[in-house]
Image (cartoon, rainbow, N blue to C red):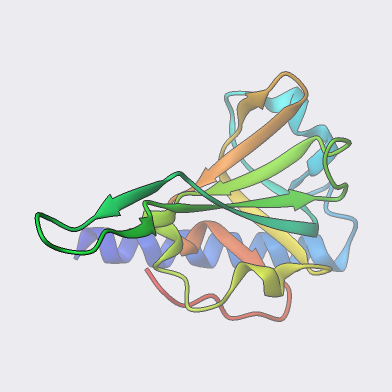
Length: 150
C-alpha cells in the first residue's frame, strides 16, 4: 500500500512539474536536456523533445533441444529515447531496458516530436552523453499521451 501511495505521489509530482515546464521553456521547473551534463549524480527532472527512438535487439539465442528445430529469438530489446538532437550530436538520452519497456501501454515511437519530462538520477552514459534509465512508467510524462502501466 505504501508503495502504491508513493507511486501515485511521484506521478502527481512529475505531471505537475511537466505541465508547468511545457507551459514555459522548462528551465524553471526542470532541467533542459542540454543542461543535464551539469547535474551528473543528481535526481532531477529533465525535459526536452524526443527526436528519435532506437530499439536495439541484443544477440539472438538458440532455443530448442535434441531432435527439435533450432528457433532463434531475441533475448532482449532495449529502447533509447534521444532528446533534442539525433546521434552523434545528442547530449541526453533515456534508456529503457526490455523488462521495464514491457510495462508500457504505448509504443515509445509515438513520443517522437513530443515534449517529454523524465524524472530520475542523471548518470554518464558515454563520454559525450548523459542519461536516465527508466524503470517505471511514472518516471516519464509525455505531452498529450497517457502513459498508464506500472
